[in-house]
Image 1 (tube, rainbow, N blue to C red):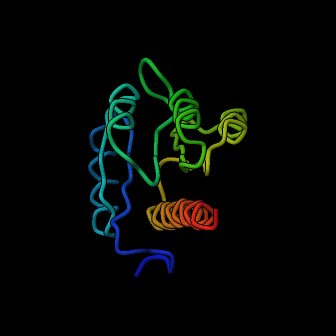
Image 2 (image 1 turned 120 degrees about the vertical axis):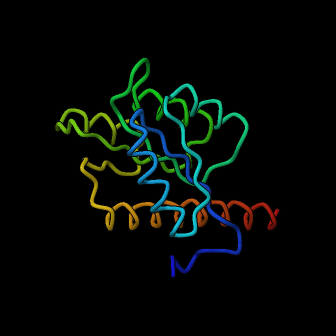
Image 3 (image 1 turned 90 degrees about the vertical axis):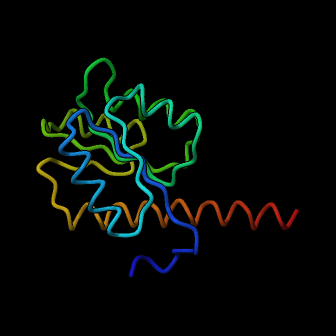
Length: 143
């Protein structure tokens, strides 16, 4: 069973990667965990999804054609700074990790992914987003 903050609503995760196999594997894993998963094979498609849908967590590759996951992170943070964005890369470097964190990434994962860690990080991010949303609602109710 997932985190204690889990409500009756299904958590939505947007997964962004230009590699179809990675999208399928991650989508299958997260779907089995009970998440509603939407995939995008580019930052441009991810941006379209973000314009029309709500997500509790975004998981994005960093290195992609045209736009990078760091660019997408900036767009997401401008739209809603509270959405946790987890970045992943097969080309890990200290500079990239620092840039990701400085731009507001929730976490930074290195490929090949440890799927147990992926599940844990996604759960933690979704719970944090739900907690923030609930706190905002409660504060609004007090006014």
